[in-house]
Length: 132
Image (cartoon, rainbow, N blue to C red):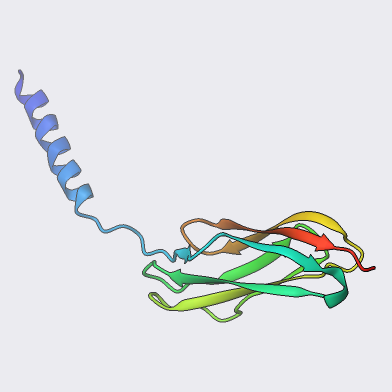
């Protein structure tokens, strides 16, 4: 092996070692306790029902919930507007209105964050028992 080849191999090895020692970028990360909720059978006559999805920022940078959008106007998510510090918990409350929607339902809520996973999908489902 020539001296030039050895030199480039040595430089390459030093660069690889140096790059492996560089810390990863700081990032927020939302880790949800559960990603879905089953309301089971609910009475249309009793009106809206709600559930709460709890999450923890398991990253090392503040977590921002940028937006939460439901797949249908019958479902309304509420989310924190302030950053969630690393190690702290937050909640997203989801309310479903069964009025005029008899039968089985499945809805999704897309949660947009500044975290490692930019979009997280939450799910709700159940069956609406119609008014008599």
